Length: 200
Picture: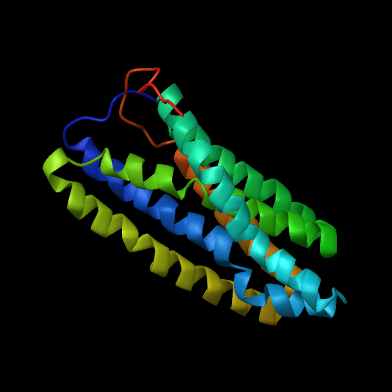
């Protein structure tokens, strides 16, 4: 579904987008609290565990600016959000089906790349509000971080307790699949292509 978002539909789009944002955090935090203990159970050295845990933040830092510039240049945001979910689905499915050090590293790397898209989320969410309500929009979307993270960690913990570590990967995959499906019904404001000119 495409087209400009106008009038009363903005509230519905914002509500749908907020749910997608919650699922986003569920997908990238479901396994986070258990990474170190799982990696230790695989026999990964302590120094390497630090690398696995830290790769998420490193990938997010380096990917955030290029993604923000690219989304502004093409004047589209939804495709980048969808790409983040696809990446999560592919990488954590690999970790789910073939658990091991390599797939765990790839899964954590995908979390960082997907997490870099969060800046685009905040911009797109604000577009559903009038300019004068920008602060309200930021206050609302900022609550998705703790709520989604808490839900992800809790659900992930319960699933892992019941089905083992690898079952926790399913939480990330299912949450990302559900969110990706919901994005099909999400519309975004039309903006002029090309965006601002970026210098060095």
